[in-house]
Length: 209
Ligand SMILES: [Zn+2]
Image (cartoon, rainbow, N blue to C red; front, side, top):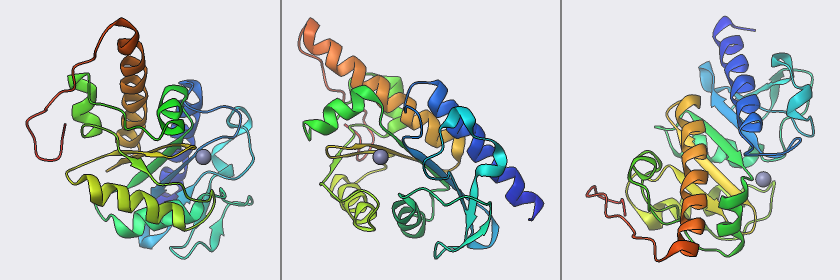
């Protein structure tokens, strides 16, 4: 395996462990991917708890999904990761979580409003909701891309209706930060509705709000 692919593989593993440590997923939920060289993609394996995962468990696949390294099977959400990376050249990493407050909004098919300035600036404003799509199907990527297109602007997080959240970044650190801040926005919005009426921000940038 190429040295650059080993470095990306280990970075995907560290990001997946951080996603689990931060409470954005449980056991083996969710998945992480990042671009390697030559169109290859490093992605988390299916059905392996993060607590037991080591760097060698990360799977490297060709752009068409054929595994080229790693002894495990890739996540069942591989078609979504490959579809998003193929359609969005500015995106280098994808983090998919089932974080609790974001999932509460996804369960209601309600966007997460932009109610905290700092977090919303990273996330790209309100988090839109992608229509229901079958888990593990290529349609999941189509649904996310439709929601991105409909929302316009530079959105970096998308809710999957009745399922979870997808966070996009130029690299793994950004995608993880987007996932964490989208969850923080959802938690704050839910709590703020107990306190009063949260004020939705107009961030003053195209597409944000
Ligand atoms: Zn999921």
